[in-house]
Image 1 (cartoon, one colour):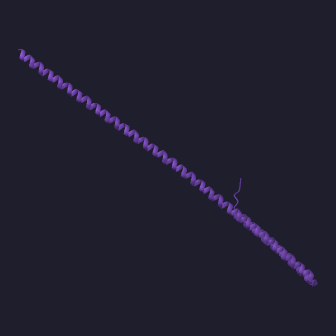
Image 2: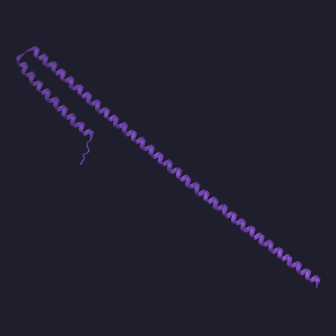
Amino acid sequence: MAEDFDIDDLMAEMNLEDELTAQLKAEEEALLAAQLAEFDDPSLASEIAERRAAESLKLKIEENKRRALEKRQREEEEQMRQYMEQEKASENAEQAMKERIARRKAELAAKKAQEEEEAMNKYAAEERAAAEAARAMAERIEARKRELAEKKAQEEA
């Protein structure tokens, strides 16, 4: 099983270890300085002071390096998070655009189908009207023929 590690917890543990190490070194140097002070040798006291200063400077440099590394890591993580957010937003925008296009195509297809149906219904109505007009005309012609035939039959009779 993989364990999840929190970078802040790990860094806090490292800081604690660094502090404890620095404290131990300081205590050792203090003890050594106390022992040398017994001999009251000024050159040894100045050498101890120089060593302390050098060790202190070394610890400060290491601390600054560690902080710079932590800062760089945080900045890189933030940049990666922002990049991922931008990518996600871009994907969401692209998907939304695809959905709008699909909806618009469906709307246009439905509108076209409705217009075609209306045109077909109009054409069918016109055809029925034309057929009705033709039937009515044929009936009037037949009626007129009968009238003329009856009139002719009456005149002949």
